Image (cartoon, rainbow, N blue to C red; front, side, top):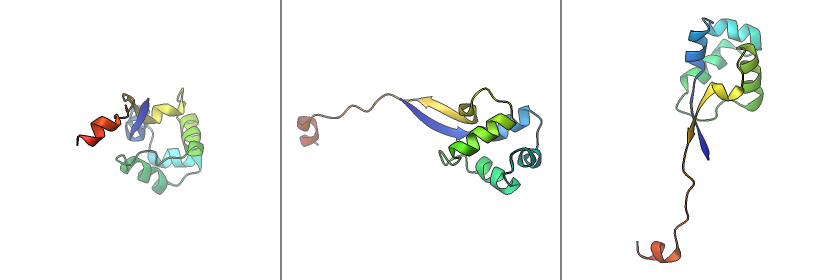
Length: 87
């Protein structure tokens, strides 16, 4: 099972030496919207699938999943009724 982590857009733009303004020109999203995605890194899944695909293509990424950190998490194991009753 995986959990979506922080948005990596800031570091990807920096590594590609691309400005938010240029990304806005390439994608049709406003600079303000791009800045919002970058600065709301604490909020998971802010970018919709359409935006993920559009931005990944504009940045020549292999996968839209590169735009977010992905963390592997262990599956939640339900507790038995006996364990729940002992709380």
